[in-house]
Image (cartoon, rainbow over all chains, first blue to last red; front, side):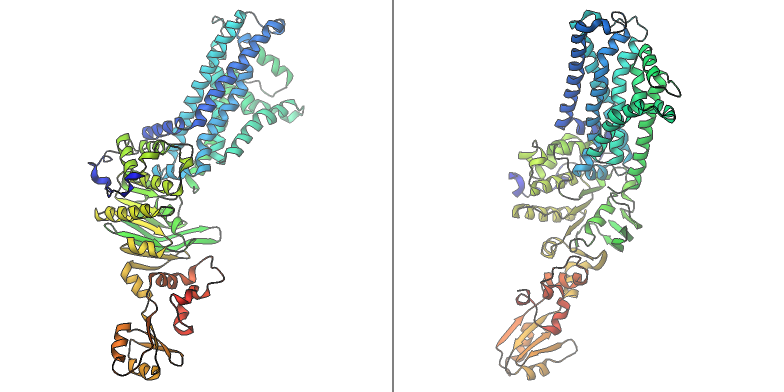
Length: 287
Length: 322
């Protein structure tokens, strides 16, 4: 504040530093990248996600030594690797839902959004840029967490070291961060639509943890047509081996049993539809 | 240059801005004056595209804000204090804003120094006072070195030094040929900073033009004269531009001539016990302009709310405000 008394008020002192400045999607991407990494909550949620993934994998690997016989599959099979990763898939995703939702709801909650949209009055580039940054960061975070989980599990229990000759191994190992990042994007999309941190997080976590579970349990005939298209249940198929998909499909009857990638496409579809709704709202409503 | 034509904003059944037309010219500081709730902020938000007009248009340099290819280098806006994520440091906030236009860190550090934020640039905005928040907002507005500045209540929360800084800055920017549009609900603040005045009340423009003109149009000189010869004096003063009200025996109020003119006229013939100019203040001009448009009028200050009645109902000016 000490310089305030000086009469140096001229922004034109400098030789027109901003003359080449131009709004562009790349510039907006860079802005969103800076925004994401200049908040402490980002480091907290990224760190927590990796910790959750690794701790749950450690717990699964440790328990294998007691209850190994109950696990299906041969040493190093995709099914065993899935058992190590499965708890982290859902809980890691839920932590990153918070991060993803905050990137957009945090702006509405604090008034930042007015600065943002004054700088980018067409608004939509902000939505795309945020989505891209969230997708990249959540995927990388989940990938690191997944990789560390497998390393740790293999160290504790050699039987859990992935056997890469298993044809499903690559799909399970890459599908895990893919599923996690896409559920996080669902949180981002709902946040962009609802513009409220609490509402967005409660909606997504409540739907994934409670509503989908309940709908999968109730035996009511018409629900057979609903179950295949629940976002998280469908999306998780991409990170689940066929053997276990058949087991779960036997428990909850469904009108169609989607292939792993078709299930993932259902999750992506939910994200696309909700982001589209958010985009319409963004263009037409005041901030 | 900012131009509005029939600019209207309705929220449900309430009309916040009611078909206003105005032009804000470059090279001058234009004050946007009005009571709280008169529509100032709504108008400013519409200029930068945050709110969509219900009807009418507003353009900057002839184009809608949203169609500008590099908005920050054309228009800098301080819309409200702390339109900023409190968890981010001042510098990171400015870096993120600058990045949208590819403006480099060098310029970010320049505006930080310019706004006197050097000591707190690395601190999170969470701990900022209202005044520091305002400085950050002004720094952000200056990032793109824009030709048009829109400042909503820029001195709000600033200490006296900061107020002086904003005044000097606004005048300096206008002297460089930029368009400076700043709002305030304080007449006294606008009067010392602005060249032109745009007065809004209940969503309508009630006066616009150079500050002196607006003020003189809205006020007339009133002089209170106490004299044992009041009746004779009143007769002597009568003329086309003069109105004399008899308040009580021996006390008149004269509208039109200055106190000096009345004194000179009376000097040789009439005894004067009192000769007091009682109006012509900026605040009174403002009050009379917006008297019918104050949205939340306090119940106790009728005298201040109805200054237009003052000429006939009683004395006005400093005493009446008591």
